[in-house]
Amino acid sequence: MKFKLNKWIAWFLAICLLNISCAVFHTDKLKKEDGYYIRHYNSCGPDAIQDALRELEGQYVATKEISKKIQDNGNARRTALTLIHYDALWITWPAELVKYFRDRGYKVTTTTLESLSPEDTAVVLIKGQVLKQEWHWVTFPTYSKETIKNYYKAFGSSTSVIQVYKIEAAK
Image 1 (cartoon, helix red, strand yellow):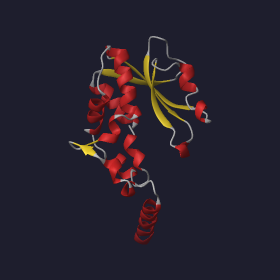
Image 2 (image 1 turned 90 degrees about the horizontal axis):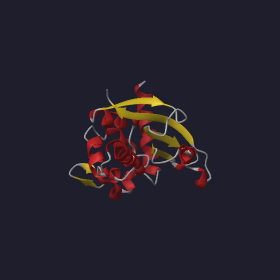
Image 3 (image 1 turned 90 degrees about the vertical axis):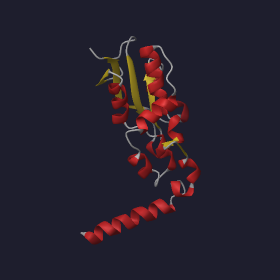
């Protein structure tokens, strides 16, 4: 068993090092500020959270501050995935998004895009083509249901709604 594990690790490292998108070859993409990855500051996760907070609270919260709060819970998965592609630093995991809103006192439930009413606020994870790295967080009603469903159409891809997180005040 040990031989198989070592062989798997060797293959994984070889693939990472042969991959020109590996962060090892793009150390400039790993820039930090006070221990936080700068690349995550303006990614779609903090952007979508910012849009949702604008809808819910009517106030502006900087994506940099949102990102820092998310990164305070750790960067191990993001950092590990940079061995495959440096853009992994843009990732905001669903659990991180849910935790962010719950920490602010909001109730977060999963639902469908179709069930949202115009008064609702939701953050939606969508995907286009996986090999093109087309994964994105968007906010309803900042984006209409129709825009969300056709988000990647302009890029020649179909759009799949992966998860819809309805955000509402906790009762």
